[in-house]
Each structure stands twice: as structure tokens, then as C-alpha cells.
Length: 205
Image (cartoon, rainbow, N blue to C red):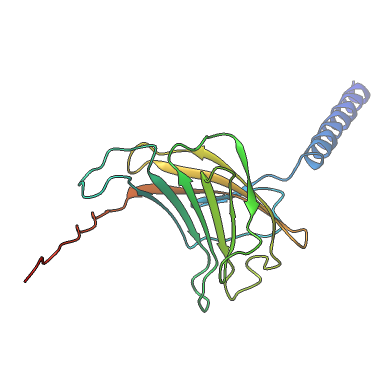
């Protein structure tokens, strides 16, 4: 009886060990998981990261001088991600400008601007529905400063009211081969747009 019990225990221990080894092999075969923090999710394939001190989403309405302007496809949405601010300025800043009617859930490749602007790398989509700007701060360890190779933007959530999330995945390939793949989310607020004053003429004196 004791010998049979010992035999059964040995079999059970072998089965448990095999199960644990199988789970370990399964886990080792999986891709690394993405990591998340407030306002940003970093893809597992990122080799550089922008750690945001703030992620802000702003709507610039097409109409002016209105207290609560209705949402329109002609509005412009801005998603601005500012990096660490406990370093000397300028701070690393990634900015997306989106047409309010931009397609969601579709990867949109951008054309990198070879001219760029002073202090920033820029890119835009074929029809101007998405524009991208990246300013690398003094802390060059925070982001790659080798220049842009390609930029792809996927808008995953468009707001329809203030307080809704604006979310976009940004995939950037840098010239030296490093990759940035992060998804940013900001809570929308509408900017106040004043109407320009009409030109006046004093007329003849």
C-alpha cells in the first residue's frame, strides 16, 4: 500500500513539473507585452520612448465667437505630448494635428518633410488630414535625434464632446533604425476662438 502511494505521488509530481515547464515554454514564446502609464501606452517593439509630463487634446472649432460651438468636420484637433520638464528647456514635444473627420482605425502613412522647420522634424499625410511635428529637447537620451525615416499614425478614438478621449497610435522609424511605437490619449477641451475684428475706415476727413 505504501509503495503504491509513493508511486502515485511520483507520477503526480512529474505531471506538475511537466505542466510548469510547459507554461514556462509558452510564456517564453510570447511577444513582450505593452506597458502603460497615464495617457500613454508603449508598444513592445519600441526601442525609444517619450515619457510624457502631459498629454493634452484640444479642439479648435471652425466657427468663431460662439460660446459652445457645435462639432464640425472642419474643426481641427490637436494632440500634444510634452516630455520630461525637469530638464533644461526646450522640452521634447510631439504634436499631432488632425482633421476632425479623419478616418479612425486605419494606419495613415505620412510623408517626412525633408526641409523641416527650425528645431523640429515634420511629416504630413497626402491630403493634409494628419500633420506631425517632433521637437527633440536637450535631453537626447529621451528620444532619438537622428532624424525621421518614416511616420505612421492610426487614430483610434475621436471625441464628439468635451471630456471625450482623443487617442492615436504613433509609429516612428528613425534614421539610425530605432523605433518609437506609442499610443497617446488626451481628454478633449475646446479652445476659445475669437472672431477677427472687421477692418474699419475713417473715411475722408
